[in-house]
Image (cartoon, rainbow, N blue to C red; front, side):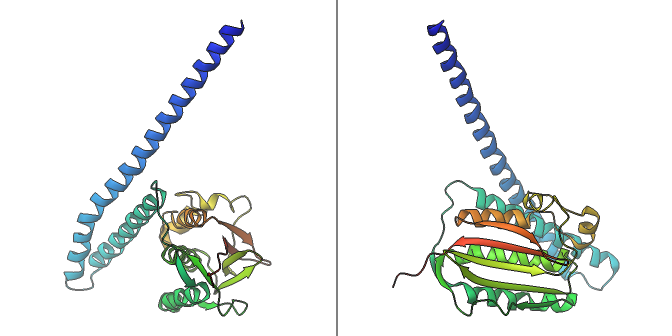
Length: 249
């Protein structure tokens, strides 16, 4: 019985390892397939967008082509971004950066879009005037882009505040709105790929439910995490916590 038990143990262990390897190969194939397919879609889509820009007039048909092609192009780009972040061996490009200045630059870049939407977008008064550290500034900017875009497009809030501060050994990048908030039980699911809290509203405002998944992946690549907190009396606060890596003196 002892010998039989040992043999069974090794057989079961071997089968589990084979299953894990098969699943890993399947997941790798899925990522590569999605990335390749997105590249193939993006090429003709770029041609469609270019042709639409050359079309004369402001007819409803031309406007619809530009709008829907733009939405599809944004979706393809988000899929490519997520595939890039999930790729094995992703290398972080760490460099010295002032995170507070990065926040201010990102907010300034979104000001035209916020004004068109009638939303008061600003850096919060509590934000640090300067906070130097070592990180991948391109990825941090990409995460902030997605958080601000999410607040402007989906929150229904008249105001959006962005801040950066150090708490202990962590850096907190916060995007807070005073909108409809996130329903109970959805604060974790909203970071899942393609999950949308209100599909009907998303059909009007655009988006495919990938922006927050990208933010979470970026936070974890940096050794941190992102969470959604409720705001009293209403609204949502997205907090990206990152380990603070001070600049060597």
